[in-house]
Length: 419
Image (cartoon, rainbow, N blue to C red; front, side, top):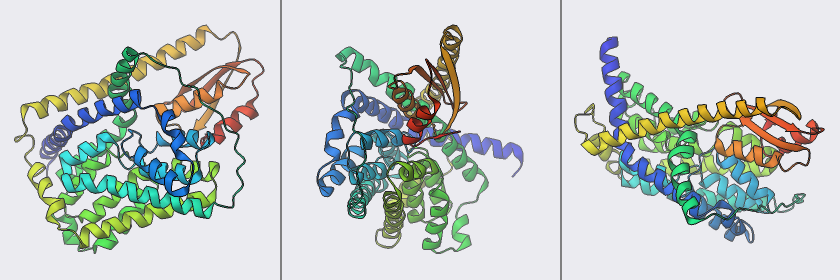
């Protein structure tokens, strides 16, 4: 394949996959905004404690539709735990939430079909409850040294909530997932353009070997639930087993190095082992179930219909319009982030009347991380303001007699790492 042919094939596949997903993604973003604005996370926190079974089941049920990726779930899970949630309930939430979300469930249906769209939240529920129960058992004798802090949420008017629906769903949430969604789309388009169909079948690797190889890559890798969909779909078209693709859909979003570090620091090694063990065993179990117990046509037929090298020729006008709109929203997200950073830097320059300190912090990846760090640091008596720069991985502090050791302890307790 020459360069010109590759570029044409890549662009055609990229926009075809994007357009197939876009209508459902846009609908998912709207529902994500509704959940954020009208069902605040603080209102469900009270259900994350109590008996092991109750806390694990409720944490999974509440976590499955929430629009939180595996980086956004870190500060949320940490806040729940620090405000009184049980370890079992917290681990259940951390396992089930990043695997799915209302946006990724709809996008899975659009690109991979109804069976995958059903089995994803089912697997998230089963592994979430199982991981929560195991954590409750193995940490039963551990001493609880937490100091609970009740979070106060400002009441908002209906107009403010409606505004938050669109601000969060179509700006902030897109900012959080756009990078990894684009990476997933680009990788899928490259694989589609370069690798011949049935390539993985020619390698003749048993499904269990494919799953183990995918698992080794997926556990430390960060990829959001939505960004993993085009990659998994194209891998199936190229001959990988549906079960192995499901391992990517499940283990990729559910784990990453940052979450592993946070759980180990905040909740202890036993909770970490329960978390990792449940995800690894659960993804392999559901992968084997798909490959050996369920009809293969359920997981391959719809993708051959939707992604069978039509290069945009079979797209409807509303799919193309949705694809263009999603690209514009992604660009707007980056523009808003740039303008906000520019305004914050200008404000910092104009307000450098107090003592200021800038520190490097690893592990911050999204707006949830930013808000979590800023909110907790500004609770300290000697901090007047804390401003996170996600691009530079820094926090600029303004205040009187800043106690850096206390600041670092606060940040480390949230699951991030100060340099």
